[in-house]
Image (tube, rainbow, N blue to C red; front, side, top):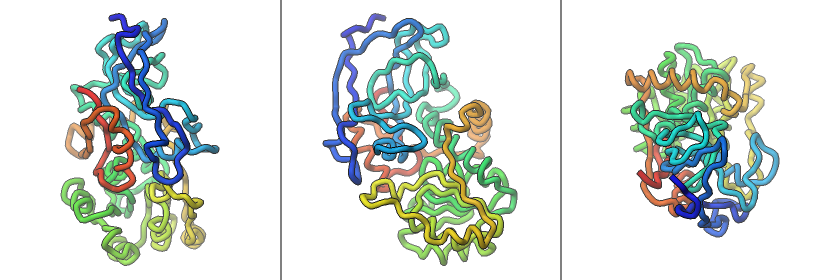
Length: 340
């Protein structure tokens, strides 16, 4: 097919660096003609966008594990789409692909850091969740850094989210006792009744410290932290000797207008000879294929279950849908589906 000006690409670009929660004025919604691919490139028609808490951090200036999105740039986002024109022999028209294509309707790629996905193996949204970056984050964060052993107690915060819900299930697959921390009775029921967690703590309605004494009486061997703040500080008081803490995220701090507050109880690491380690999923990119294959096997045999919150709306729904990550409205992986 010939593209040229036959197609219009709508996209969201970063217009200003947010203070607190992103506002409508922090975005520029732009329309421009779609250019055809050059030699070695292909054109993707995007159908699903991955919405992740990390996106809020990418909007901030300053040094981090990945360069910030610059003012005027298309907002960074993982996405799934279908190849509709190709001048790259490795990607054919009709292939479904996953990559960091950004918050837009069409993207041109040279194939670097893009992988083909098979909608006959799993729904496309699953390749942005359990078989995508959140799943890889859970897999490597828990197994490589947390190093759980059968019979140990693993505690996961943000446990009903895209990463946390998979982390707890992987820990169960490896024979651990798993306690999830989540907000609200509905999310806690999901953890225990559907996903197989041994216990769930509702931080909105319970005393977390008291609940940890009940559900982890011998201490926490592995803590997978997705929220930071008060929850992290509380878990630090309940560590077992030799505990491993995985710092994956800190969603409770992302929209602060004040500096991020660090843990006051960090000396517990010394007392319990524990370790606290940050993890970034991109460090494990050369192992994604093998991990994804193992997790696809767990999905196929029913040991791993997925929960996806798919919002079916046009691209213009992106700003409001993104905000739902920080209000706690979503359960599991949040995906914006912009077309069939």
